[in-house]
Image (cartoon, rainbow, N blue to C red; front, side):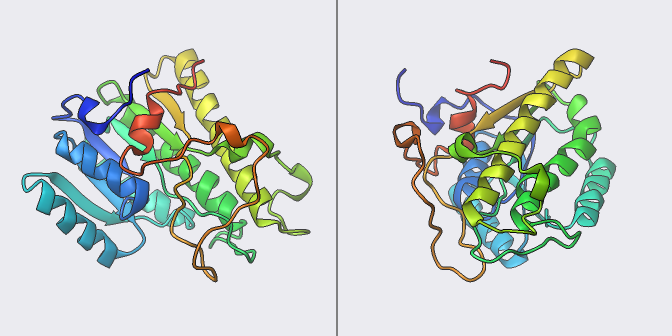
Length: 253
């Protein structure tokens, strides 16, 4: 397979896109690439100042970019619901949702506003709730897709139903792997249900490579124990992001 670059993205005029965690890293580069291809992109994040800065940086490259920013905190399910409700009142349809936002290995156990372990809440429950509530808009989209940015950390993970929220024992990387496994399972199940019910929504999953998110509270740089499958870990260029990875791994086989 020849190397894929953002130049391989077809024209995206008229496509309506929502990207979570889009003020930096993979989310920002995905927004930049799709905006450059002509998509109408709503980028979301938790920091309005970073959102404004991201918009300015993208417009410096693509002055005619159709982009806007909205706050979205996936750690608060009420805010997720409010965001989806606003979107339903503003848009007739959405063509692409990129569930990119995530939290990686905070050294201390934190909880979401709803009382869930932070990684499980932000990496799985938040995207699950957002996708579910946006499903009516996605079903009206043109060739609609949902991309879940998971991680091959799921390969060494399991769902610990006896301590799902890591209340008895918190191990940062195990909790992270569990959350990414849950996210990947959701991507598969969404594809299965879409096919079974004729929703027409394609569910795809991507591994972003070794490009870490912004460090969580209490630590400057993310760390991780070695994976059991080191040869399977591609080194990521954030400019390729989930739009490049997603084309190679579809949850339908």
